[in-house]
Amino acid sequence: MSAEPYKSNAKSVTARALAVLAAFDVEHPLLTLSQLARRAGLPVATVYRLAGELEDGRFLDRDHAGRYGLGVKLWEMGLLTPVHGRLRETAMPFLLNLQYDCRETVQLAVCDGTDAIYVEKLTSEESVPVQSRIGARIPLHATGVGKALLAFSDESFIDAILSMPLTSYSAETITDRRALSRQLAQIRQRGYAESHQDYHRGSTSVAVPVQVNGLVKAAIGIVSYTLRDDLSQYLPSLLHAAHGLATRLEQTTGNAYPGLNGLTQDDTP
Image (cartoon, rainbow, N blue to C red):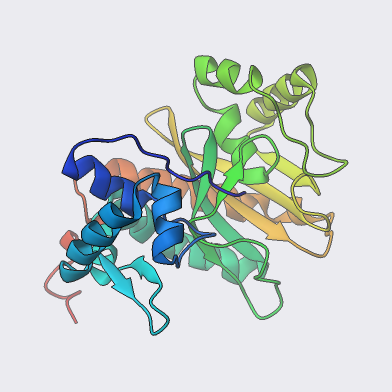
């Protein structure tokens, strides 16, 4: 899913600097000066000055060809976000156990705006790891984790998604609002979502929501790129992982880094 350029009409220095940083995404990790200016919607001269200052602060970096990319300072700051410091770190043991059990690709996703975002992905030697990447945005209506997130969201949010045009990614993608509404109701009733070539040809998936205090916080899914029709056999393990993660998140409410701050003296390396 390709992101649109930021296109800024910002006047403050801060807003312009943010427009420069927002020009980068998963599909545009490296940009020339002219590309950066175009995607930020700012004059080249302005971007040249801002990029230099951001590079000095390690927020941007330049490769041997002169292309700009996000710098190590942003990586350090990214580790402090709730998605990484709290959700991802807390989820990792449960994801590892699940991936060991199924030997397929295991994904952790959250909802952001009208999309889902992959927060983590684990693969094995037997699975095919090239179809998704951490940080990629995916549609809510055409993926297993996306449907699990959508089905258990607030009714007002579901209505908003159903009122939007539903993009078709394959012959299996549901783009009829009534049909999707019926499928979401079925997912809520049975507690898990399935996807069969809805987004990628040749892929199947099963996913469940991670609910904390009645609110969906994430979704965990198992994906096969060999058209397996027996992924439901892993539902007990999948539900166990989701329940374990939800319980751990409830227990560590208010703790931004449960994996670190929860260490005892005996746990410290």
